[in-house]
Length: 468
Ligand SMILES: [Zn+2]
Image (cartoon, rainbow, N blue to C red; front, top):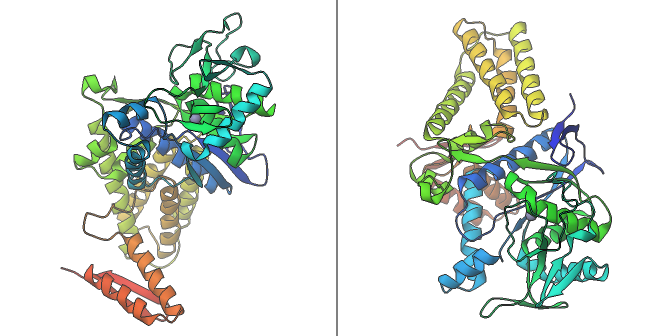
């Protein structure tokens, strides 16, 4: 079966392939760095990570841009309240966001771009929209006149005909599906940070940021634009209006949106006391991979009910898989190959891939793996497993983990993760190649301090942890 995704624009499941040269050009709306990101945000970012891994498993390369919104109303308000410079304030939460992403094992997009690094390009785009009569000015701010864009409403499937009255809105986020002219450029306010640009002083609105950076890095038509469902209107609708008015071309071929996350069956809100950042959850002693598993386990187009029971089940599920892997690795099996087990393994791999290719049906993909684990455990209990079945079974598990990435435990504080050890060994190898033996010895000593013992063999360096 071909890879296929639900496209919010067409409201259909469509076969997917990039438009050009095997590379998927993708844009996702990143965080607004005004506080720690909450688990609802990370549901979306985890979906994007799963999407990346599924695209790569299909043989595609990725060129993916994510913006960091480091200027907006909330940031300006919060930074002022804490008497911090805008950059100083956003650096704290940008760093926190990157740490949280790393904890959840979310791959870095190829380009992670702060909005404030592209203010001049945004001003230039606004000037071009003005030259083609898509804007008007009021009190030093520039607004996009949505009556000049006939396709307005095509993503959110709102029918705005007869409703485009020219009312305008200054804030970037508005919930009511009203057709309103929105701010591209905001006039400077007393005491607020502003930029001097070719279109005058001020700062960009949120929507223009994404259009400009997407086109700059990826070209006029993207393969995929992804984000949370709450961004469909007005943010993505406005991105389309601006971008297509600038280029005359479709802005993105596919639009993919992750559904809401609820907590214990309720909408997450600070007043209900069920508002959690990732840090809150990890602070309660849950491993990041359990959070990752739970966020990934529900297909992205279904609302996800985040519960602590669910986290506990995620933990149990991961343990089951790790034990299975250990049993495969360490079991003593008779020589030869059991053909029916070999067929079972191939079938599990195919079911897993088919489910993922079916609009990222992670629930079905997981079901395929757990049925397989049960069957192989039964076969091992019955002594049917043969030595030549071991490799393919581990490969099947590795194929799963390439997407879900939960099998490797997160290092306890103080203990080095395997990947860190490996990368230090690689650094030592490079130092030796460069005949920098002092550095190589230093790396070995550092590892020994961490309780890691190296053994150089003909086939490379092996390592083990010193048993305490
Ligand atoms: Zn955006």
